[in-house]
Image (tube, rainbow, N blue to C red):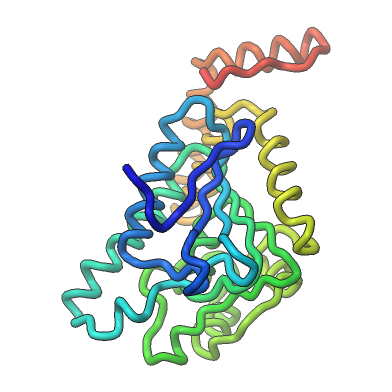
Length: 260
């Protein structure tokens, strides 16, 4: 499809998806949701792509979340239909078998924080501002943030973010386990690139199995989760990469993975 609200590019084996509405702090409208979903699915199908990286254009924002001008006059029926698109985008990120990285600088409030919760790695610049401030405009997040936050960090911290609309800096996001690490803004893209290259050296199918096992294990019962992980593990023994990885280990050489 032709993209109007995002920029899509490839660097080495990383597919970069950049929110490109800097005049409105990269606010996400309905078309942007659809374009991001399509871009992730396209990247997942592309055998040359090993990782997906989200970031924002301009100097001030990753994305400040939903475009409120689009939402203000919605009815309950309207917003139910609209937010199912957001739910679909976030589940697409979580179900994608390739690692997804959020490289966050500036404002990442509302839907920006929600999107980062669905990513596998979050790198935050010192300038980053995370938060779920929907409470300040009379609503709550509507695309899974309350559920993800509660399961990731517990009820008390989830309620503090949701009910007070508290903002967190990049460094605080690391402390609250919303980000892996915080770096100076000038180093953010280099850090994301380095992480993508590090992931690209791993067996892609094994990365997908690890991601799926963690995501499923965080939601399923103990016994179901253990069985799921076992089946993901066993399925890798039908791949060429498993044979290559173990052969390379025994032969004391670097493996050459093909994603098959």
